Picture 1 (cartoon, rainbow, N blue to C red):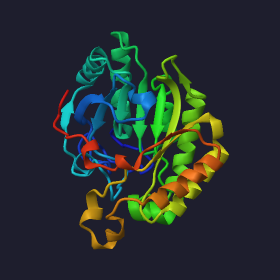
Picture 2: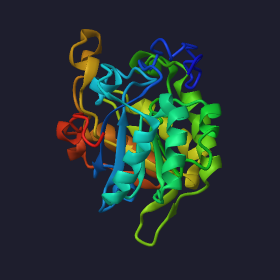
Picture 3: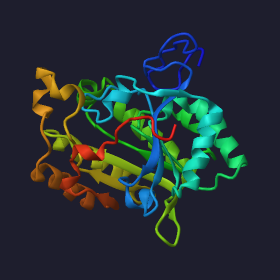
Length: 296
């Protein structure tokens, strides 16, 4: 934390005294801990996923649905000890797993929290749920800590990833990250009830106007990973964040069309990817939780 290079930004900020690119200092900051029922079926199941939503972010997505915690940094500071207790409380409530949402910039604090919780009886899988913009070196710290990786692969084009997330190197970084995730966990494994125990699910969100870029992402995922991963194609894009107010981004201030989504879906099928597809009705604002510090 004194010269932070946890994420690909490698901003080198002393987060003990200043805020990093992620907008966070050294304290773990979160906005909610809850049973989450809107993840993929093998993650949420019938009992819900024990989601902990962390504040701050290493990306700058102009359409972020969690912008009030990722960009506006809404959150509550908690200790490593308290985070460990939250994991156990979620397990006691019946959570199918512990779901670390946007955890990259807190990895050195999350690791001891998970270890303490496991010493005290945490037995459910740990999910690392991120935007895919991850350093391999940071992911290696999580080997044997994380059971399930749930990354995005958002873009293929460097121009598009720079425009929408200020990350021109996004695709190369994300693919290297997924390779490391697969190395750690192997092919997906499940219980008899279909609950995921380990493995990688790669998500891709279809964006308005950009289905051709999505097609390229899907093709590459099929070529590189095939049956080693599950694939989750998402239709839930809802205009949030800057796209609502920035005239230069006005074209993204709409939901996707059936044509756009089906073009990408057809490519996923042709690429031999297996997993999940969202109904277009998933593009609803009510699926975004209220960040009211519940469970913290």
